[in-house]
Image (cartoon, rainbow, N blue to C red; front, side, top):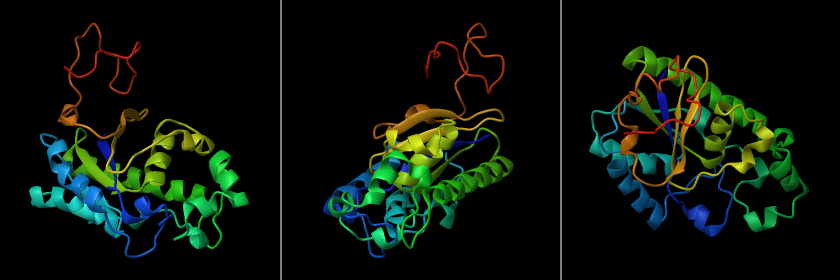
Length: 236
């Protein structure tokens, strides 16, 4: 099954203002975020991509724009299922103000029970995002083969929710994960289980190019979906 590169959008004007943007229109990348987007094609140089999928929000489309310009042949799509969580009445408010809301304690310690006023639950957010990933895995594998790699530009909570699912981690634990702006998280899916290859990587990604590297027969797991006991030797 394919390898998914989850790209969090570059730093936005809401990030620097300390605002929970949610789906508020007009939130764009700030100067640093634009620089992060411009660096993305170089970071992914040598990594063959079958497709790029984006949240419809502007900050994600801006993040992918330099990559798509550098690879005009790369098919690109939008999927509303990987858009930002609907924070409802919390959208557009200062995070410093929200820290005093009783619901914030639930968001931090028991997100499975969190439902944003006028918005959606964190359970619903995870369900739609994971459904999108599974659907795209099937499509990419059918159209480009089991070793294909594709990118998905989305939002921090979406990245963390998808990773939690890949790790078999309860949603209540997903706040233990982190994904900085413009970071890349890589998950390789197999018929038996996903493998987390990168989490919040902000550096070079050349080692993700192509299919998983071969390992000596003496070190190889019995099946491609089996974990390497002891951790394996890594990329050559």
